[in-house]
Structures are given as C-alpha cells and as structure tokens.
Amino acid sequence: MRHRPRTLVLIFLVCLAAVWAGLSFAVSLAYADDWRLDRTPAPVSTAYVVDIQQHIRDAELVYRIPTGRLEQLIFCESSFNPWATNGPYHGLGQFDLRTWLWAAPAAGFPGASRYDPVAAIWSTAWGWARAPGRWPNC
Image (tube, rainbow, N blue to C red; front, side, top):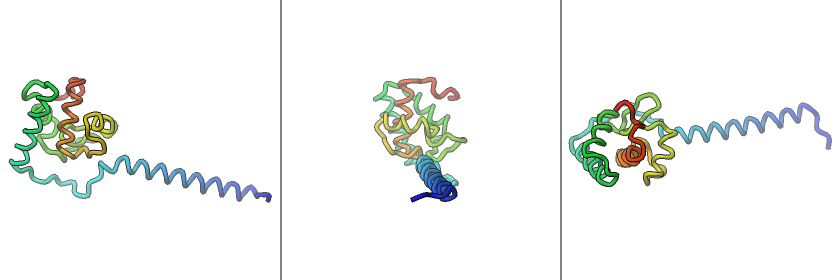
C-alpha cells in the first residue's frame, strides 16, 4: 500500500502531539507537589509547633547536629510554617523540587511532599549533616 505524503505528515504530527502530551503529563506529575488550591496558610497551633520541635530535637540527636542549630535553620527558612513558599522553595526546609526529589528518599521519605513537616525536618537534618553550607542564608 502506497502512502501519500500528506498522510505521512499527518501521522507524524499525530505521533508528535502524542509524545508532547505524554511529556506534558509527566512534567505535571513531577510538579503536582507544588500545586495547592488554597494558598492561604492555615494558622499554626502551639501543639503543632511543640510536635515539630520534638522532631527537630530527635533529628539533631540522630544526625549529631549542634543543639538548637536545626531549629534555628528551620525557623529562619520558614518560621515553622510547613506551607511556606519562596519562589521555587517550599516547606519547612525550603527545598526546591530538584533537591527534594533526591534528598527526601535519601533521608527515608520517598514520595513525601515538601509540605510534609516530618519529612522536611528529617530531610533537612540529613542534608545539613552532610553539607551544612547548603543553607547559606540561615
């Protein structure tokens, strides 16, 4: 069967559109963590902050971080607000997506959201223990 040039072009364009749609979908899945319908942060209760501080103290002990340093770092980055955003940086530890995608699994939290406070605390501690200079502003 002989194909006409227009038919081949049409087939090529349909295939190209399918590949483009697949790539767009994959990228949207990668950035799904960044999408929130409600961008207004909820008020943070004192019980929540105490729980966060307990995880911080535990992470400092496990990773041998000087007492108070991790708490200072997380307060400086996000004021203990797990919904904090600053451009591409999100969560308690203000991770960009690229860093989060390798740091969270390495710290034991594969698939966790950057907005998960426990995952962010332990990932921040893991990262700080290996490279304290990664947070140059705090």
